[in-house]
Image (cartoon, rainbow, N blue to C red):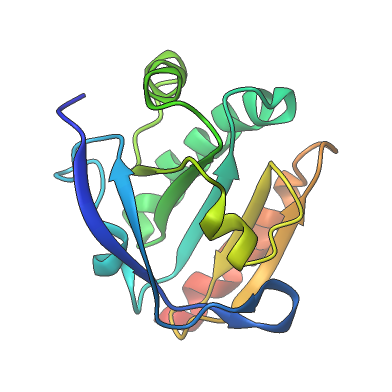
Length: 163
């Protein structure tokens, strides 16, 4: 992994369950290089996006992350963008976590949980599937197993709408 970059993050999500976070700006530290393996989130605007809120201390996150990496391998070539948000996780521990699980997409730190709280994220792990227009079309939270069949179906449906 390359050095940590700082940049302004603008995520345009407007859904009642997660609050109105449209045009909020936060500063995050990119935990991975933003080249071939991922783009800064501002460049993800207008594209289908899977956002994963996770933490290094979260056991369900540890179970889910390899599955998310497999989804990335399958759907990134089809145009689905991925972004991880490490909530209340120290940078060094988050970097080790990402290296250990070989996570290939961009991840950002939300050390104070400000971004997660603004969106009223109920906890980690939380996964949001975001339509290119900014609507959240699917969400999953909690320590129950990731519903891969349902999520895969939702992703395919979203990618069909994109075409």
